[in-house]
Length: 229
Image 1 (cartoon, rainbow, N blue to C red):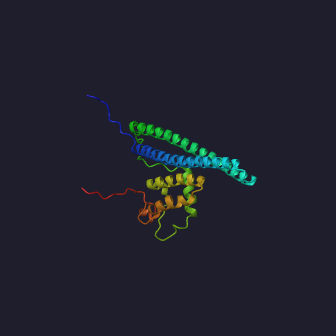
Image 2 (cartoon, rainbow, N blue to C red):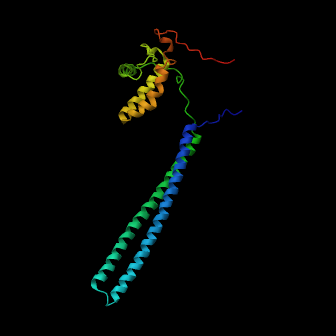
Image 3 (tube, rainbow, N blue to C red):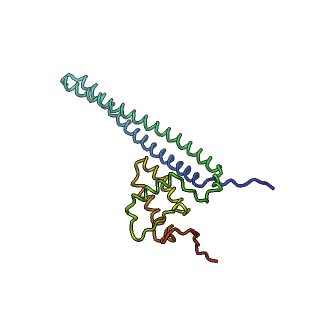
């Protein structure tokens, strides 16, 4: 009997790698479309030069053309040649972009293949154990609750011994981590809307974490979920 176990890859990593492959494939299509457009522009520029050169030759062969007329067609030819040079540069850039996009696609495909055979990292044994409130988080929560005004309402609850509530520690620790990131990135508005406002009802709400501490800290914090037989 074989002891080999089926490798379960990280579904999130596989999905991200697959999305990268899709994005790289689309990037190639976009780059190739730009190459096609650049080819048309370059072809038009080349045709314009042929016409302009013929016109210059005709004007030079005709004694009836005045010097300023000859100079005008020569200037037009020079203008067409500059347009052709620009078209050639854009074509070269577009072609290089296609090559780069193909390299990106190859890398994305390799990453996807690797993700499909890379086992998902198991959660640590203490993943389901509530963290202890660190000194940094405790100090931060004290500052936060001193400055909060939007929660000072009759239906808001608070427990001065919040660090003895596991869920409160979990939520405040997560909020503190996101706060530090948002502060450094100057995205505090997003922190309030996408993080604090989402957690606040569960922390301070009448049916939130501190619902049993309305008349003082409840040392028995066990919460019974209703279960069906």
